[in-house]
Amino acid sequence: MMLLTLSNGWHVEKSQWYFLLSSALVSVYFVFNKKVTKDVKPLVSIFLQLFTVGISSAIFVSLTKHAPYELSSSVICWFVVSTIIATTLRYLLQAVGQYSVNIETASLIMILEPIWTLILSITILSEIVEPQKIIGAGVIFLSLFVYTRLSRR
Image (cartoon, rainbow, N blue to C red; front, side, top):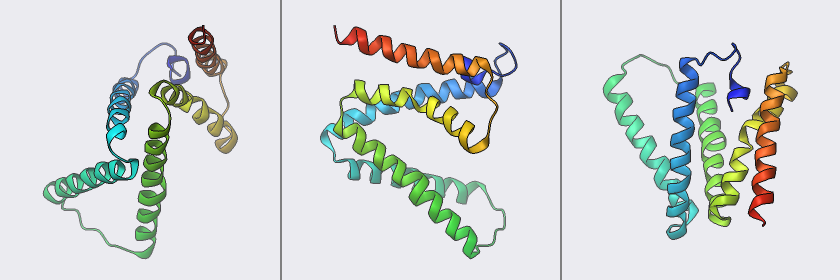
């Protein structure tokens, strides 16, 4: 991951520490979510998670932010698209996937997320890839290959 994210030499920026913290918290969430989906159906689990976050965020915003805003049809459209497609559908697919496979397989699939991000940034955004990032992607693939070979023994 360091090879994929470090761009100014080997100097770690503040945002990369946040990324590391986020990755650790997502790992904890991943394990807890797998334990919960053993006893609770994925649809119920995802509903409770998104409902809790939505209600607590609405309460927090109503108590702290008092900026004037105007609701237009485009704002409502983008809100619906981002909540339904980008958030709810993604979490639902992840919960159903975790419910369907064992935790080791699910975590191996999630390790490939940075690789997919790199591939999409190359194809959609025409990003110029530094050799360091290609080496980083290769290290991730190599680690997955070694892990699957050793776990089959």
